[in-house]
Length: 456
Image (tube, rainbow, N blue to C red):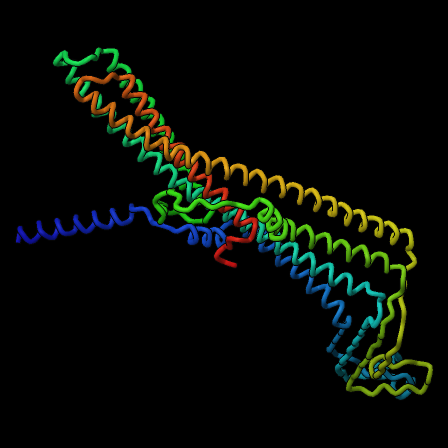
């Protein structure tokens, strides 16, 4: 019995350790998965989605005014209603509430009215307002897409930053291992008083080791921040790991600057947004110019009232407010004569249109400059990657030679440290260049419409 209890406890402990190891392990995500999470969960995107719904409501409001008539309906039912007698015999009816002429019985009243107005010609005003609202909706949708694209690029930067920092940690860890081995060998040589080494060489190794550990600490901090950025951008709270494990560039693509510039101007959502907004203001300006003309409409109404008492009046000039029915329809025109206010609004609308015309031109100039900058940075990163890929191989051979000489007591500490520094620096710059190439290319492809988000 004692053996069974011990076995059960051991099994339970093992299961708990397994669960803890599973819960603490990082979850792997692909870049597309993280971008999809960011677009669904990001708070800024959710805020802009509400903006889009707001402008959708404005469009529905304007479209309703264009397609549907204005209608207003009132309905009332209640009681009691006294039977009012207009002809009262003061002698025979004196017992019925004195001389007020009110019967002792009560009834009900139903009353209703309907008014409608339908514009049949407004000189294009309602059509302009509808089109302005539709363009405003399209502009808000483009702003939403622009923010989604911005979030996708930020997630891409954080995603590949995780890979970059892991690669740098691998390079630094290899340097750390070689330093440990070198220090061990140096200590042996000093103890045996062999080789061309002194205590000063030991101090050099220890100093360089402190520099190396500082770089490792800084890299781990960057890795932690990159993972936190992913969690924040994607609206999750996971221990993140990337499905891609390296930044190696297999095929280096050539980029046509002119093609990417033209595609960026055509596909950037910021340009689409400002063009739709400008179009909306143009429609509003046209509506203001047509405000000097009248609105021609068809209007009418229906009036109905009924009570269970019959209020027949002997005087034809007295209206019975409890029992009647009437209907009328007619053609009308309406024009407000506030010419000064209309002229002021006309000037305002045109000024707003011209403002966004200049903003569009400035935006296009900025896109051309931004595309040029991304292109130049991509070319620079490409050249650095190719250069330091060769440099890394050369530095590795140098380091191998210095290590072999050091192990047999023929090398010197300075040569070993210099080769270690060169190898680590070449590896870091090569990986950083690979990161820059990927991010610049992804950004250019997103802006040019060559790379789509997974919700498109």
